[in-house]
Length: 361
Image 1 (cartoon, rainbow, N blue to C red):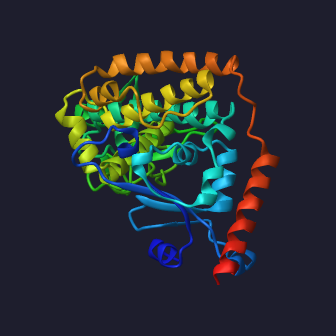
Image 2: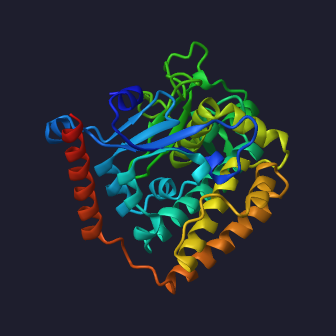
């Protein structure tokens, strides 16, 4: 089933322009996102192939089946609540039956989690992006040997520096486990003219190896030193490096260019949503109302244009989180939406829709 099918078959209950154009924070090049609610025909609803939502390939047009829509409303999902608070100039279509769904009937203290916790996650994401931009990983990947150290007196020295200082090649060396000591190895050097011990070196391949390599050592050989492999450090480095490379490949080019161009080294669109969500959460807690079209549009666009320092925004956002917590602690909102009333509305709407289709049909 496609969105075109929903329109062609007359299954839409509601359709609206969402996102930045609904918030009033759109720019000339902003996309036009569409969200909506549809209802499955009676036979398909009772059948085995329930369809909870339908989206286009880019996921900027998403329509939710009525039951799924109400399920998400009961969780105070921000997107669903914002649909109910859509400004009239963004409403494309509204069936008469959909008028019974009002945001005020679903607002509850769950918004503390659904709005504010999501915003907190976005702050963490902003911090991670800031770190990636300001402290990028070097273009060449470190190897296992970069995390290996050799004992020197009471201290330690990188193995590569130790090899250079003594004039040894890694291929001359062999490692053997030291019993009862994790990631500590006896390091042997074959200095015979023909290297008859045939040690295997420290790693199989310096570029691709994920671990050190052990050798068979003749009985009676004495270690030249002891080598420690910082396995945990290497594992952490690999994870961070992998995450950076994945971010580099998947990052949104438009967002990244905006981040670089405004010179403040944070994702401005991301930070805009942090403040939008937190301020909406505070308004919900204090007023019991949802303001989708933002009265603080100018401030949000200042963030979008990079007019604030990153540290200032993070500090203000964290202070706002505290305010939001305090507002919900004393809010008159119910703990959760009224599930029984929501279910009754869902059933009534579906029955009325099916009855109307039978009359028309």
